[in-house]
Length: 337
Picture 1: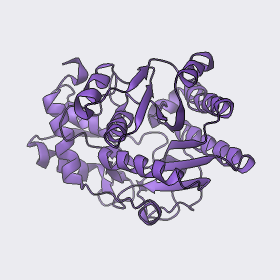
Picture 2: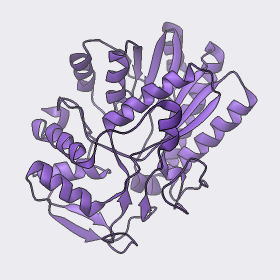
Picture 3: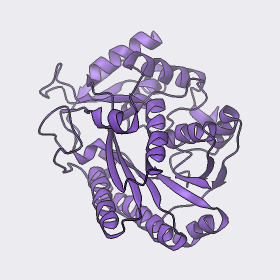
Picture 4: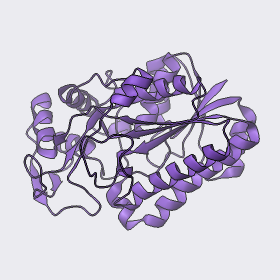
């Protein structure tokens, strides 16, 4: 029986695929490579010693996706594939709704047809909108301040409705906070196509001289230094959380929801300083206007995941920065050597 990993060549998907392979799972990766690279698959093989099956398919293409279900005995799905940049979603809402919601519908239609019962959804802390209280617990009120967040919240609502109607399904919604870091080997990491939308690859590109400075969006938030505060989590901790969630689904829990975060918030400038310390590089930055859809602060209460999954983040901010720097310094041009 295999685990289907959508977006498995992407940043979080590739790290999770390695952990699944190391844990003895058969892995089938589907990715349209719109924000990843085929070289990642070679590195997954190199690091795990195993070769995942790979299909270059857009998940919204139901006909092609059906081939994957026909050719493989799929037991579980981890659904990473999505467009994922807050700022971009504000200017491209149609693409975000079409891709992020359409892909999930296709998967559930095929799950029903091929009797697949286990599904892990890659959600996001953006579903908490501008949180009323901190740290954020899973029962906090849900809303969204941007189209990206709304697509995640809509999919969550879909999953809650589908699970209510079909009690045989087991679904884990994982709301993660801000993944950074990279594999300890320095062989895989976050490498978006084009100018990065996420903060860490932007910082690392500045550090290797490919971008002149970091844009810091707003310094007038009600935070320690006026810049946005986020709960940064190491991608390896996040990968481990997905494996623990899969294990949980084997207990037939129905629908479960967990925050995956460290429980500690760092401001943008604190992250920049931690990265400078880890890399020995000064990171020039410019304060610019707030970005549409952004909020002041967001960090998790991860108690529930620790209690029910036996999962806890083990890496701190210094290690996250060291690993991000190792990846970027060894691969200054990313996967393009």
